[in-house]
Image (cartoon, rainbow over all chains, first blue to last red):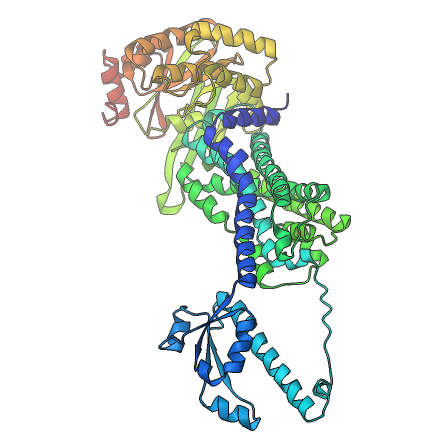
Length: 391
Length: 248
């Protein structure tokens, strides 16, 4: 039997007996993506739903100056509250999302037919205040337009002369694409899953083996070192792939039950999603496994390796952040960059955007090449004398 | 047969350069037990590491059964059974699985592997621990397992780095008996030690190393004659020029 296969089976057998590794591979890693996603979606859904239906609480200063406006707001489910002592401070301290201030001049201007001013006090940097603010602005503008139209009619003019141009909205976004921004995070959790799945083995087979002083006897066997390394890399990759595959399947199952349609989004998680995602994640799992092994081979101890690998775990978040901050148009070259390619592929598949077989293939091949290069570098490290010496 | 010719090995560069082995030559013959004797830090482990090709010497030659270690390291390792200084086991595997792993890496057929493992288990008196996971093994049980896996491919040449290190009296005696049995099987046994009595009791030939150099290469009797001391320990101290490291 080939010695690399021997090493592979031994590493798999040994690590399957380690409860912590098995829990990480079979539970923690795979369940991370779906769990975080369920949390995220649920928070979002409850927030959106409650915002749209609930009465809008609105502290008003000087409500007595514009009884008609206040009555119109009340009709539109606005809950008029007494004015706070210091409206500006109330908004700054987030006691109120938005405060309406009507000055005594309002009546005078209104009676003369001049633009009557109301003030909206709000903090644009507060995410939570954005919805109520927009809602109130629309209500007041609507009230103004209705009054304007009535005044024109009273003078015998058609209100339509005030609207020389009308915009008709033709939004091209689909429910899937509206979900996109939030979904930019998801590929990272798949990648992270693979990372967690391979981590224990990457450390155990290098730094761990050296710390246990079993590397030197192992290397005294008549097997070229690259074969030993090959077996270890295969085992690490196998664990990482198991985690990733389980993670994708778990997500596809859980995703069916998410109330995404309530906020106008929908996930496409059919068999094509599963097959294509696993396909592009395969070489990435190998690449990450090789990277982890490379880093762990440099570490002097198990603990040191853990520290390094925790830092390495932050690397895959870079394309995720880039893509969620800068909404770049997807281009073919992106599929050729490891991590970015997987990110783009998974995002587009989930949103129901087309991903050509060519793009999938480019992603697979380029990441495989990167994985081979890292394997070769790791092999070089394996041939160094320092590697085997335990003390 | 193991031949070492003018071996040199240094670590580090510049001011930090430390010469570990400085021109070591000796021959370990088949059917003999050769002892590599020297104080701590004399260069024994480095010499042995060059022998089983874990390290490559800066200069000099290592021949195992006439095969040059620099030319065909895999063939050399195939002819060697090695118990290195580091003898960690895989603690989540049983003793049997530990031994079988190394047998497979040597490419031994399954049947031969079973036969060889069983006979080693008898010789080392470790039948009772064969199917236990090695986690929690005593020092003696660990060494037995490490020796069994090192010899499972029936090597002609056996290298042991301080094999009795950390063993109690009974285990040490068992180890000596085992080394002698390997000698009667016409193997070439090379072991290192810093313990005088052990070397004196076992070896046909003693190679004394101090500060990276061979200071004597004789039979125990010749060594006594050469130094004019009747006591081997005194002979040893005289050879290495200091008693530093002997007690350790």
